[in-house]
Image (tube, rainbow, N blue to C red; front, side):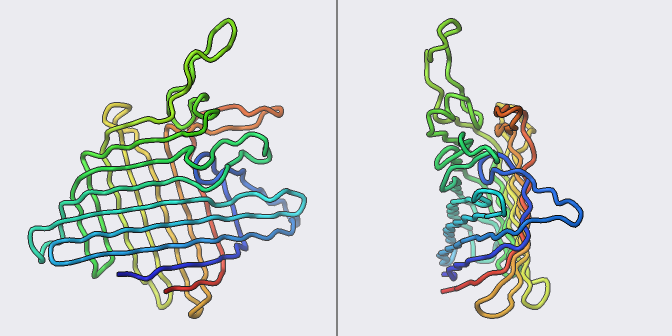
Length: 294
């Protein structure tokens, strides 16, 4: 079994340029010799349980994050929002091999509504809209001595859930939109609440203490659908640098890059939200906070 990690971070520098599922806010540009007072908070928890016995390895991981920011002259804005569960079950032929026959489940959604700030009237995401479920089989290479994990799955089902009626009717996150009567503009059929794909998934996880009390964590997920634009890759890439000051105080520096062709960014033009094409979502965090491990 592994430890449970729980932390509260106060972010001193926070720059975002994102739209879609995890964070929805606009980038803050700083003018020369200008600035506003602000305070940010990030609450996160990481819970890991792992069972290993001879040829069997079963790892479960729950990650929860929620952050808010209050800047002078602006309302409170959400800066981070993630609820993720990962479960991997593997079997190997002998205790010497680092290769496992594996099945993997990944579920990812958010806690609360997301907005394209400064517009707070129209939610562009919310709990279970979207939610992503990956379920597949493949091979896993694991080296616990160097904290390296690589998972390759030629057969993974990806299901996108959009359980919000308004967003589903808009066709958000790649689901089929509602069909409207061209004359009365009434809905003939509601938008689909889910979309299923079959594709190829590769994930990579690596952790290393690069210096005393400085730990680097890398997570990468690459997915492409066999039937819909094969070779068009969804990317989810996180790099986190964690610096331990003492037993209870830690500092974090990290980036999170997301690209999904099914997530169409929205921009506000003349007071109205306009849907544009997919964009790279990039989040950067620098924070110091209290942590407790048990």
